[in-house]
Structures are given as structure tokens and as C-alpha cells.
Amino acid sequence: MKIKRTGYQLLKLLAAFSFAVMVFGLFVSAEGIEEMENASRFAMTAWSLLPPVIAIGLALVTKEVYSSLFAGILAGGLLYSEFNLEGTLTHVFIDGIEASLSDPYNVGILIFLIILGIIVQMMNKAGGSAAFGRWASRKIRTRSGAQLATIGLGSLIFIDDYFNCLTVGSVMRPVCDSKRISRAKLAYLIDATAAPVCIIAPVSSWAAAVSSYVSEGNGLALFIRAIPFNFYAILTIVMMIFLSVTDLEYGPMAEHEKTAMETGDVFAGIADLTDHREEMNNHNGKVIDLVFPILVLIVCCVIGMIYSGGFFQGTDFITAFSASDASVGLMLGSSVTLMAAAAFYLARGVLNFKEITSCIPEGFRAMVPAILILTFAWSLKAMTDSLGAREYVGQLVMNHAGTFRSFLPAIIFMIACLLSFATGTSWGTFGILIPVTLSVFPVADPLGVVCISACMAGAVCGDHCSPISDTTIMASAGAQCDHVTHVTTQLPYAMTAAAVSFAAYIIAGFLPNAFVVLPLAIVLMAAVLFALRTLFRKRRAASGL
Image (cartoon, rainbow, N blue to C red; front, side, top):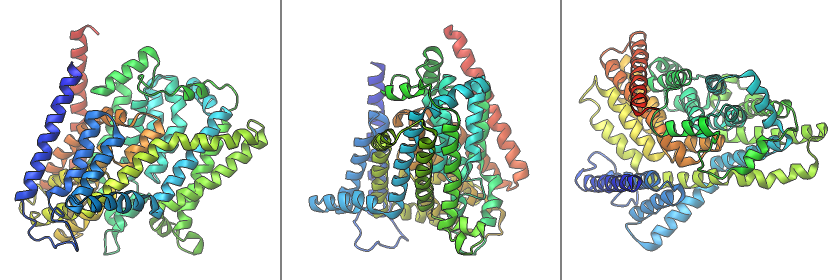
């Protein structure tokens, strides 16, 4: 009864919010926004935000992500075609789904996903994952140690968030399973060390993306100057360490962790993953059967990325990395790794040719949920792009940028959160808000640096929370965790870091000095976490647990 009541309340909230967006779209003018060529009358208005609102709201209420995403896509098609049946069908399936699946970048990511799924199946079948889990269970003796090891590995793999999610998941699943850490908690740790770490790493695909939006040619220098003000990324790392050391859990995550610790069911009975459990009990193979493919994958993907940036044509390493195509690099690196791993297992005699080829369809099947969600998420993004959602939000920021100068970092952070959450893309948010911010503030203005950092932090926060974000989807796939479970369990943690970050950006708007504001933000984060720890301990004591 309680669940039904909660679902009913959420449905009412979604309906009210959707109605508010509709009314807002009718009465808020798009003054100052140039008309899009052949645009729908709903384009570049608040109506353009309705499709992701529908998709995200339904996903959180129904716990069913595929139909929810498709409902959002369909709403976008209806608005774009102004409720014309033929126009809706062609826009949804041709301009949306087909275009997303034929985009070269997206195809490269899907190939990388499939190949990595095959490699993981090979590692499991060879017994590498089980051997690594047994070895790590002897070396890593505590739950805190396993979580800190996950955070450490995620922080080391800062090159690309996709690569981070799937690699850390492959390595740390057996370790965390042996310490009875729920897959929901593992997915959170993976997600929180993907984009938040990449956005403060100068040598990463994210640094390259941000730098590309700065036309003066000093984008990397601006990125580095903004790192100390990236409060959300830094506070997320602080929060992860605190949670790991103190065993503080709250929200839906607390139930998953309690079930894992008491019963050993790391899946909390949500998904039928019997096959994976059987692979974990495989006593054949050695640790090298997992370590070798992972090391080869890291080296080959780095080489693939700098290759795509022209390193072997004479371009220096930094420039090549900044100009790299992550899709091409990851696809080439994983392809070479697949061949190297197959040869390695054949040479060791742990797998024969038939067993290796059987991993191909198995690996593909394992990645089908992630592929479906990614395809629908990309298609939903195409719907919002065609409706001009990003241009609408960007123009609103431009029109009101000078009104509250000192509060602008906090306002930009909040807008970036909402835009990234609704569209599921950090990089698209960068592309809208960074040029707007640079048009308001010169590069030399200290407050401009804070605002650029607020844009990056907000985009990562929204990306971290959004169920339609590709990074969130990858983290679910890496941890082999139910996607909606991952979103709902990590949301309270992400919102805690976001709230403290918002307060820090208010302070930074009046005092744009990282040496003062960053320590204050860390102290405030620690104070909030200690208060939560005390509160939930008292609640457990009062309930007799």
C-alpha cells in the first residue's frame, strides 16, 4: 500500500510538473531567440523540455526504462511535427532512432561496448574474474578496503568516462562481491569516479571537449584554472571516501547494502544473474587471466586515442590527445585487445577455439540492455535538439546574465544541472553554456573562471543523476546492476554533493578565491556528512536495529 501511495504521489507530481512546463511554454516568450529554419511552433520554448521530463519521470515512477524513454521520444516527435502522424513517425524513427544508430561516433561506442562484453565473457569463462576475486579477498580484508580500491582504480583511469566505467566494473565486481558490497553501491562508486574524475583531469577526453569550446586557443589553460572551483567533482570524491571509511549509508542504498551484508545477495533480488554467479564460482584460471587483458586494453585504448588525434603523423602527445576521437580510439583499442586476449587464452590452454567463439554471442547478449538504453537515450537527445531545448536555455541565461552578477556561478550551476539532467549529456551542456559564459565574462575575469567551472560542475552533476545519461548507463553495465536501481540509489548521494556545491558557488560569487572557498566547501561537506551519520545512527538506535 505504501509503495502504491508513493507511486501515485510521484505520478501526480509528474503530471503537475508537466502541466507547469506546458503553461510556461505558452506564456514565456522566446524574445531574442532567432527562429529555427522550418521549426515547429513548440521549438525553442519551454515545451522543448517536456520530452525528457516525461521520460525521466516515467522511468522513476514505473521502474521500466525502455518504455519510458520511448514515451519521451514519441512526445518529442509529436511536438516537432505538431501532432502530424506521418511527421511524427518519420521524425522518431528516421531522424531519431535511425540517425542515432548511423552516427559514426555512436556506432564506435556500440562496437566498443560489444567487444568489451565479449572480453569480459572470455575472462569469466577462463576463470580470471573468479581468481582475481579470491586473490583480492585475501589481500583486501575489509569492505572499506574494497570500496577504497574501487575509488583508487577509478581515479587512475581518468582518460575517458566510458572506458573508466566498463574497465573498473570488470576488475572490481569479483572483489566487491567477495566483501558483500551491493551492485548498487559498486555502480555508484563507478559512476562517481567516471565523469567527476575526468572533469578535473587535464589529460582526458573531457578536458579536450571543454577546451574545444574556447575560441581563443587557451582552452586547456582555462580548464586547469577552473579545476579548484569544480566543487561538485571534488566534493563527490570527498564524499565517496567518507562513505567508504565510515560505512554511512542512507536512502534506498541503505536497504541494498543491508541486504548484501546480511544475506550475501549483492543483487538484492532485483535481477536474475544466476549465470554470473556461476562464473564467479569458476575455480579454473589465474589472476593473470584477468590482469593481462585489462592491461592490454588500457595500453591499446590510449594508443588508439592518440592515433585518432594524429600522434603518429607527427602531432605532439598533448595536441593529439586533445584532438582525439574517443569513439575511434576505444573501438580500435578494444579490437586489438580482443585478438590479443584470444591468442593469450589459446596459448595458455585455458580456453579452446570453440569456447572463445561462444563468448561472442554471450558478450553481445550481456550488452543488449545497455545498447537499447543508449540508443533510446541518443534518440531522445535528438528530439530535444530538434526542438531547440539547448538554444532556449542558453538564450535565457544570456538574457539574464547581468542581473545577479555575484549569484551567477550558483545560477549557472543550477541551470547546467537541470539541462544536463534533462538532455542526458554533459558535453552538449558545455557547448551551450560555456560560449554564453565567455561572452559575458572575459577570460581574465576571476568570476568568469568560477562560472566556467560552475558550468562544468553542473553538467557533470546532471549527467551523474540522469537516467538517460550515457555515463550512467555505462556505470550500470559495468557493475551489472539494474539501471533504474542504480539511478534511484545514487540520487540522494549526488543531491547531497550538489546542495553543498550550490552553497559553495554562492560563496565563490562574492569571494572568487579557490584557496579560501575550496577548503570551506570541503569542511561544509564533512559537516553535512557527519550530521547525516549522527542522524541515521540515532534513527537506527531508536528503531532497535
